[in-house]
Length: 117
Image (cartoon, rainbow, N blue to C red; front, side, top):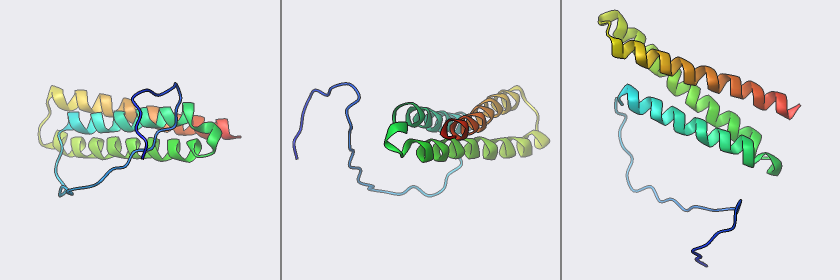
């Protein structure tokens, strides 16, 4: 394996990841779920912008946008259940942000399909 400390712009990078431990399903805070979805959206945007030419960008972008939208749709469902039990300003803030991210991701999926035609 050859290691380098400098990379030219737009270099291909391969990461090796070793999973050491799986965490059992946990209930994550709404803020953390929104951050997860935004991270997935950023990755999808990168795939759309920089990986399109190699043929993998389309499917990667669609997959990541769908995963981000799914996280937000699940959060909205959870917040809807919580809202019925107790209504507070935080619930409204999370619902608004989750709606924005989900709609952005769904719109971006449409853009991917339009670009591929």
